Amino acid sequence: MCPIAQPQKELNMLSASEARPPGAASDQVHFGLEGVIVADTRLSDVDGKQGRLTIAGFSLERLVETHSFEGVVSLLLGGHAPTPSESERVRGLLGQARLRAHAWLSARHALLSSLDCMVTLRAVLAAYDAPLLDSAASLDAALELTALTGVATAHWVRARLGAAPLEPDPSLGHASDLLRLMQDVRPSERAARALDVYLMTVSDHGMNASTFTARVVASTGSDLVSAVTAAVGALKGPLHGGAPGPVLDMLEAIGTASAAASWLERELAAGRRIMGMGHRVYRVRDPRAQVLENALRTLASEDPNVDARIALARAVETQAERLLSARSRGRALKANVEFFTAVLLDGLHVPRHAFSGVFAAGRMAGWCAHFYEQQAANRLVRPSSRYVGKPPTDA
Ligand code: COA
Image (tube, rainbow, N blue to C red; front, side):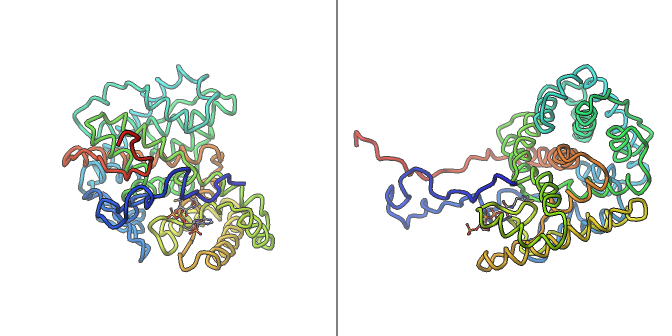
């Protein structure tokens, strides 16, 4: 199952106390930067105690009720709630950006099938040279990269099937068109809306690892593409955006609710982590899990398997929570966004190896907005480290 064994805290090195007497302020090491505030942001706020996510002034629940993904992109990049006509304009611009991405990607289709989805994204983002990327308008550049990420993921799915890429339809909403580009059939309203909710739900999430990565690159004065390419690299890791594929593997390996407890016990006894459980900030259930579960429920009338999938996921979640709470000495380890990402995207018939790519397609707007926010009030991100190596031999 998941190859993530428990991290080794002490590597092969002298301990801090051997290297330097403890107590000095410079000895304070914030491993993993937990709880360290590194920036002011107007983009999103994660309240880990209450389990609340605010995106640009909206609770997540209200955001997904009142917006579309296109609206959220303009909200994040424009700084204000878009009017219906602004949302419509962004929808058109994003459609045109999908067509440009398609034209560029089609010439490189053979490359796509030979690479992993996230490696594909890393490569195409780094190489993309659309003229609008040099645009002074942050929204234009963000739309270009958002379109590229979504279309590249959809084309990657087609390439893996040995199928030709499909041309985007700019008259469709972004979520609807992405599903069509992957599956060669126009999705139902409900399916399109469920993916739209997913993309909005993951659009931004405080100072997560990939967003921080993008801001570090921005802080050096580097360019937007370098920042988001680095962010894709961070998202790829199984402790961050690489978890939902393994969550689906886990649910399939467990198979039935009655098998959950023993399967999970075996994993934990083998020293492996349960994917989709635990979070650096949330001490309660990740609020995004519920929003995604609700989105999935809307598909039940179209797909007779949805209720059974939710029931299995809920049973596994309950057992995992119980077992983890017994082991974790007071640290609450509950379902995170990836748990229901896996169930929702699978319910939308997105292949599991493309899950992280779809995540990146939703998060791109947030990365871009953070890039510009960092640029606007920049200070080079340059923390310090504590030397725990050998003292100089010539001292
Ligand atoms: N399964 C089993 N144990 C877990 C766990 C999980 N999913 N998540 C955390 N733990 C345990 C750790 O082993 C550690 O135990 P220890 O104190 O006995 O060593 C303790 O909980 C704290 O873990 P730590 O890695 O310090 O917490 P963190 O804040 O860095 O962890 C995650 C956050 C997300 C990296 C972690 O919960 C995890 O690996 N989850 C699985 C991967 C995943 O779903 N990622 C998507 C995140 S949105």
